[in-house]
Length: 146
Image 1 (cartoon, one colour):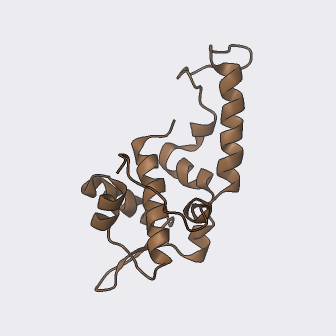
Image 2 (image 1 turned 120 degrees about the horizontal axis):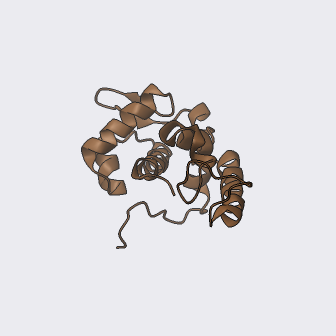
């Protein structure tokens, strides 16, 4: 449902937060390697997120990316909307421009329910929730299985 950019963003933010909890601020190359993402693309994503104040960065010997307390509490919906645009949670699941109850696509009824559930989840959850929901179990952030 979400673009690769959004997928990489969520994985990167979870990885950053997990590393921050260990007292580390990872750099973009490490983040890219650990989430199985192209390094230069990951760097561009993180620069954009820093400009939008979703993530923070520091330069120098102990530099890297980190999340402030306030950034840890940004809703997943806000993060995704910064990447995908505000219409991501209203768009047609079939890709039509003019899909509504009066002119439904073949997926309209079922997709509307799924989209509403996704919106509720994304509104009520944060990167902190994703990073720490497993009670100490390892979180897997790469696309391919070990």
